[in-house]
Image (cartoon, rainbow, N blue to C red; front, top):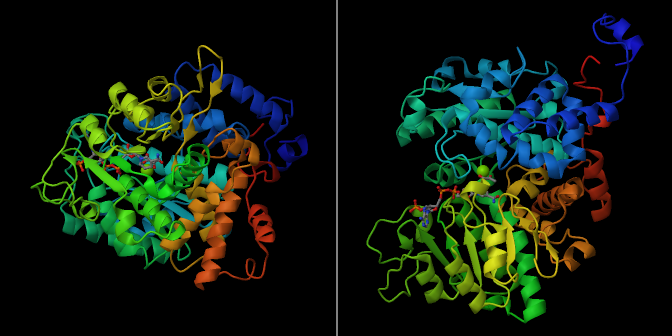
Length: 553
Ligand SMILES: NC(=O)C1=CN([C@@H]2O[C@H](COP(=O)(O)OP(=O)(O)OC[C@H]3O[C@@H](n4cnc5c(N)ncnc54)[C@H](OP(=O)(O)O)[C@@H]3O)[C@@H](O)[C@H]2O)C=CC1
Ligand SMILES: CC(=O)C(=O)O
Ligand SMILES: [Mg+2]
């Protein structure tokens, strides 16, 4: 802050005399952050910086996204959530809320409680996007109750960094309905309700009340459901998808991002190994919200782009859950979301070990969304490499501790032939003999949700259709530069995240216009594709053009 401003605001004499620009502030902050010995300490340091100096925080996040994303997002956000009740008092500054905490008791004056989250007391800055979780399935770490707040916060930080949503227009929400995590309920430091989660009737009624209140207070709000257990994730999506502006990131965002990487992997093996796309056989290890969401998107791709009938495209998938391969005649009552993909051609065979399933199916693609560390063993990976010149292996569970295998394990077991993407970024792998360096893909919904949200905010469709989600996947797949494609990458460089989000947001606007459901058409209708990308990009908030949230120095 310059000297004149200090006088104007009566802040003169309250800080050292030197007036600094944001570049030197950034260098100092990075030096301090890098000196921290653990990732959690870095997380706490950055959370404090966000409270004290939002502008500097986002300058650093944007400029150094590849270094900072693993701190504010997966994997460290997983540790932060596990520790949230222990670190919470040291994260935000006094009087600066980090998000909106709702319980059933807030009901009496719900709208007032929602309005009470006003870090920016200005009509102009009403929230555009809320990310809401009930903390029941936080990454692959299970029920973390109120500690799950780290997830909505982290996702919204990526909305700002990735798609230029103004931080003043973001609303992180945790709906604290208790927790079934007994260790937390017995922990003296746990900050949430110490009661078991309610039965379904009360659950759906409470969520309904909260969503109605949110929409009453902020009628333009887009709501992202995040990390709700699969038991409820599908039910909520089905109930609200066509009724309000919302989507489920774990089902739809993940579906789109993985389809996108899969399109590029399929193109690669078609070009290099002449594998006919229709000959793919895809095993999903895990059958929860993420796996089924991904399967649905990939199926849509085969139906739309490869003219397969629904029955043909459905038969490309074998789904595996904790009891083994999902079949119609397994003898247990399948959860509703598993029924569609349950096989009926297994001739009575029920197979459980993954290696046996691989031998039975002979897959070209193995996708992990099971939160089961190390499930893709050396034997499994070696067998895939025998079956395929370039096996496609996506261990997508988060954080890295839950991943089905590491990049190094996949490279070693396949003689460096694997086509790979994981949910949390793994380090690059260097071939010991040749020194050739391989960069793994990161199949994480962070490539989709920021652009999807920005597109929804700009076009304000009545609701988010399945086709819009599908179009984001195609746009992301086509967003790679020729250099990125030549290197065999499945996803674009994170450094280009804003360009990529502009392309994704444009796809949403175009599809909303095509479907005739866009409500804010004045600025987007009648523009060419390139003009629309330019317009979308021009709407992104940047920390350098805005003095908001600067510190006192
Ligand atoms: N990369 C990305 O962008 C994303 C990654 N994810 C990750 O996906 C994972 C799963 O999320 P979600 O689907 O919501 O979670 P769920 O807990 O609903 O699903 C987990 C699934 O894995 C199955 N499973 C558990 N143990 C085994 C086992 N030993 N063998 C085979 N299957 C097993 C479960 O079986 P059963 O049904 O029998 O219990 C269940 O179907 C999480 O780690 C999450 O972080 C999620 C969203 C995005
Ligand atoms: C990335 C994400 O949304 C998850 O792991 O749940
Ligand atoms: Mg999630």
